[in-house]
Image (cartoon, rainbow, N blue to C red; front, top):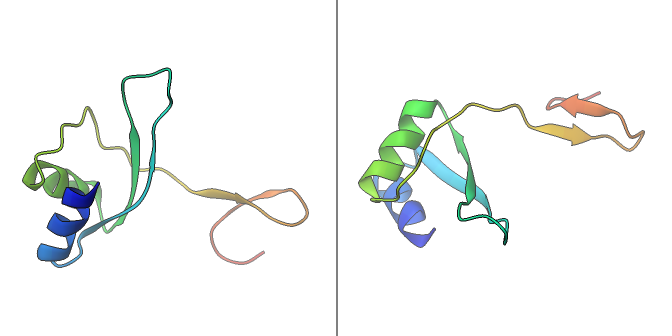
Length: 75
């Protein structure tokens, strides 16, 4: 994770790692990035020599106080 952050900072902050999850029963981890596009995330991982299977764009769904989901922005 530290290598990813260092590389991201050295390439102009193109791929900022925001979270990493590691399920104990699995031999993988999930890294969430905030970036302009998937290609920037791929480049940061390759420069940091962090192996990855795929890069996928996702929507962050947050629960509002009413319990309903929202996709960013204000409700």
